[in-house]
Length: 392
Image 1: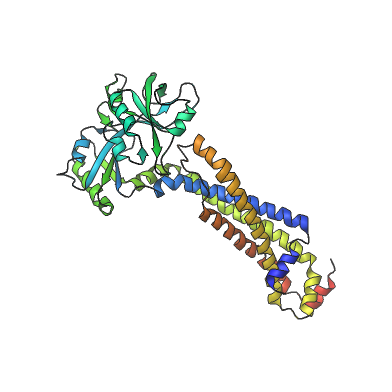
Image 2: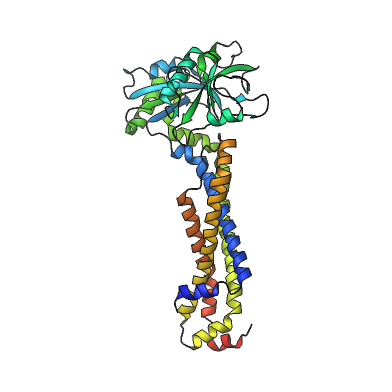
């Protein structure tokens, strides 16, 4: 008799207890995968950032503006030959006055260069051409269009968290995401429309941040330093960094939340281990006489340890497989697409990957083996005579 055969034949001797333990492990695996997917979803914007793109903002704070003419210097090939294209944008902070979508990302961008530089947001050429001829035109994501119940050619009235009054727009295009990091619930309006409006008293002839594409990603650090050095003697200095660093800087405001989620995921594994340890301890106590008989007929203490740990790991594996199935069904099929639709600004991509599920499954088996270790060692150290005396 080998370890696998013994574990398989004995794991359902207490059917109800084993099934409940496996369900508990499955729920723990599901929660672990959900938390890890949430953390990965937060970081996906940084992980998938383009290596050939830089972002530049005001050195003091993201909320402060830069003079509009900075874009001309950045585009000057004699100053920065490694830069292939550059554009800019301002935060608008759009809101739906009808409360269908209380808040979403809206920003004013250059009509001629934004979608050329931010090429991961694909727009049909005819729609781009229409945008250039419609000053109050906006291009929005497909998810936002569905939420706002609007489409190409329709009028749209929005408010802003910065600029007062109602803003009347016309939807002229819907962009398609070419990368999973793209927020499909954003709105892009024309910078010149915002800049020329008399209500714009906050950012007249100012830009919020610059997006810069470079020819050689290995030169990103050198180009960033060159840009900042060029503006260091100006009244408004810049802070230029890779797109990945730019995204991570924004995530830094949520660092405490992410660290808390990491701690919770480890706590889930601890709970799983305690549940398995309790189940295995009860099983060992019930079979003490049986182990004494096995020792008496020639099985060694190592065999007893292997049988108990093998059974614990097999129960954990069964629960882990059940949890993996629940993760694929609940997270990837039901919850993930809903979250991507309703909270696209925070989670543009929410999908439990195979590596995440594999890590959870492996962790369940390892935790199961560890949970059975102490009961196994205690059972192996019992004297044969003492074990045979126990009949309960």
